Image 1 (cartoon, rainbow, N blue to C red):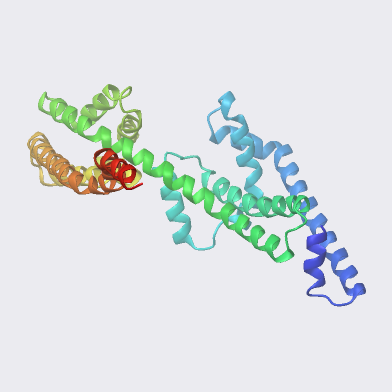
Image 2: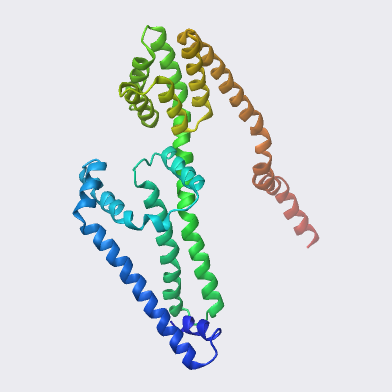
Length: 317
């Protein structure tokens, strides 16, 4: 509190103006805090919003807290969401590709960013009283850094989760492609083949199994196969799956054999994987230079030349 008063005194010269400024700041803070608490309490106790949240989400016991948080964030979502539709669409796409597909995921994401940006500076100001040697400018700078961390931390977590899920999908795609070729060549149609592959991959690659099961569910619901496959490419964001979808769409559009197209794509994809493995193997020797120079060579020189150096020191001493 003393650091905040010193910071305000640097802008306001006389004591009367400082007193009025402190009163206005405290009153505005209490008003905003009370308004936020009242909005959250009203959202939690509103039976209509709670019922809508229970209808939209699965009525699972473990998900009740998430439903309550989503319904509480709803009234303030207009104040925390970005105004640009392009940015909202980008974040929504990243959330979907990361496996977060709740209808209120975008609102909760930006609400968490806003809360962290507000709470972390308050924590810094509250902790500054235990470090009286800190200057006011340093405290303000640390508070701004904390606000920046609060704004950037959700982006970092989302990007790590997105990369992890795409890595899992990429690892499971070769097995899914081979199984799909076998199922189509055995006489199954594209829809039943996708469903069979999704069932077989349920244990080893659950993320890819869920995506393929979603495609078959969309087809059964009446969505055209081309649209369902394009939705798969958009949800995953993988170049390999996008190439497979383009191949299947062209085969269905021009009436060519899907089995032949899948067999050719499987062979080409296997060649690409082999080339990628050879490329990684060729890079390995170059990458080993730095740990050899930094860690192995100094130890080797100590072991090889160390006794001779010690004998020379004893001889000249």
